[in-house]
Amino acid sequence: MTEASITALYRYPVKGLSPDPLQQAKIRAGETFSHDRMYAIENGSRDFDPINPKYYPKAKFLQLMTNEQLAALETRYDGETQTLQILRSGKQVAGGNLSTPIGRQIVEQFLAAYLGGHARGTPHIVSAQGHHFADVPDNFISLINLDSVRDIERVTGRPVDPLRFRGNIYVEGWKAWRELDLIGATLTINQTATFKVEAAIDRCAAINVDPQTGARDMQLPRTLADVFGHDSCGIYLTALTDGTLQPNDQVAAFANSSAGDNLGI
Image 1 (spheres, rainbow, N blue to C red):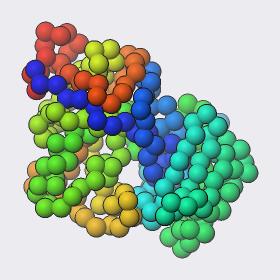
Image 2: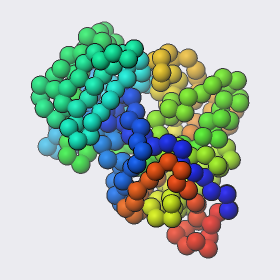
Image 3: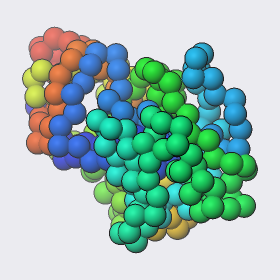
Image 4: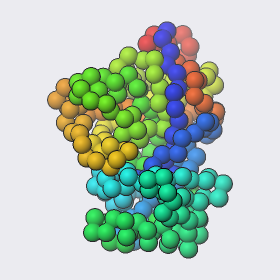
């Protein structure tokens, strides 16, 4: 059996803003990464109810598909204090404690000025206990196969930053696109944490945006469809057990939870 290994782990504390690299991720069964998409920024509306939270499509919020200017901002998040720093060209331009009204207001005012007419109205930061703002309503964790990203580079003839795909877990060691054959399979990481592979991740125009510059400089969903016959990159996982993930952990795939049914990829 050919195993993959984890190269990097990320969470995205605020939907649409930059990733938070992790040296370790503690996983709980049925949950996303801690603090992943914990906050979102309503784009000119006030529909989200923190007392009765529900899923909304990503178009309701600030995000890279329609607000590529966000990619030019670097953010740093402290999970213990829930404090967000926003930097531009290495210098802090705003920041606040997102668990407090005044902290959210400071960040909202900065984003309103920064986006100007590109926002549909005044940005409004929202959250709710136990709720996340991923692109799908399920408590999924996303995994990206770096060899698939390299295959996209091969056909485009250009570098493709893997962070365009905003994944939680990045792995290498599998052949390009082999992850798409794993739907319904079970993954074990470091022989402890167990996941079910739920679905391929269908991609939208957000991946056309360079996550470092904010330039909308590629047509990757069209490339995926034209060259590979699908618009997917990455897979969604459900955590079946608690566990701890770290870079260099080994990832093995099985047809079911029995080690005798390994897929040999």
